[in-house]
Length: 334
Image (tube, rainbow, N blue to C red; front, side, top):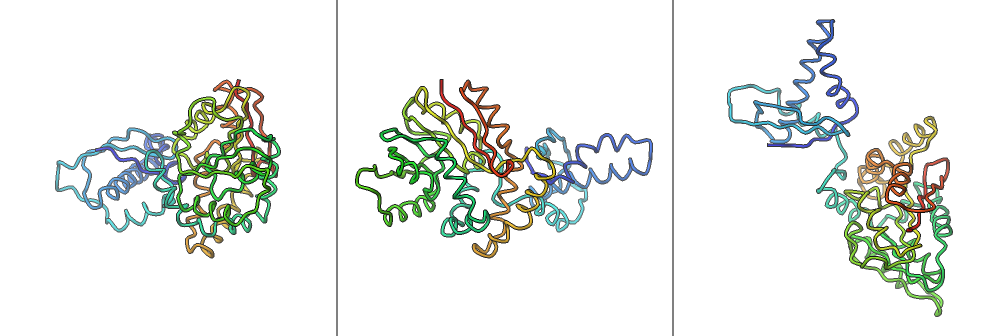
């Protein structure tokens, strides 16, 4: 049986340094490391099977903040540490809304279903209203023109989709969360657009499997969405596929500042302050603690920039906002 379990930084360090520590000339250190790694492995495995005591364990992978362990339970009689201790340690390791791999979509769906009614309000509060300026800058860089076809992926409650339509683009907002699309459609019903402007359309869909043919859009945007995909590389690849030759691709998201001190301060804000908004307005601190958790597993602006170049995009560039706290990735299809 194979299980994958996510680790926090301290436990990952212990696991990856375990072999060196166990080989230490200092007998006491080596003995403690042996015991610590042994307990860690049993903590992970016992929590995963809810009470069974694994007997044969093999670490298959211990990178990218994950550990994959193969184990069997065909031998009996071996004792384990108290299960309550396993559970206490294991439950502290990860955010309930973050899961790598194929389970990611379901977790993110649960997250947005929880926060959809207060999503816009909390965005205003946690960014001190700056997200509105960042989105205006984003749309200005996208430079939609009247009559162009624009696809706004992971559109959420529709901020960018509406802004593209106000510039005259035939805008389609696509999102996989029905509650978020429900808010977008309520906003559309309450909004008055000029008669000469196209009305934006909203549809349910998967940004990694876009149901439009190749070369369909002059402009493809995604704001605060790539980071939430189970495979953001596929997301960018799909953006490129549905863009027409010469079409523009833009992604706005939380960034990782190049300056280490500024990055540490910013991450501390995401860790200590932002979850409070989730607790106060949604009754769930983890809903907004998810931002930092997901960002730590996302390569942010530099990774997206490299991937756009690897895919052959032209005019690839990064626009840093507030010192890299937010960022816009830009590229065009050859």
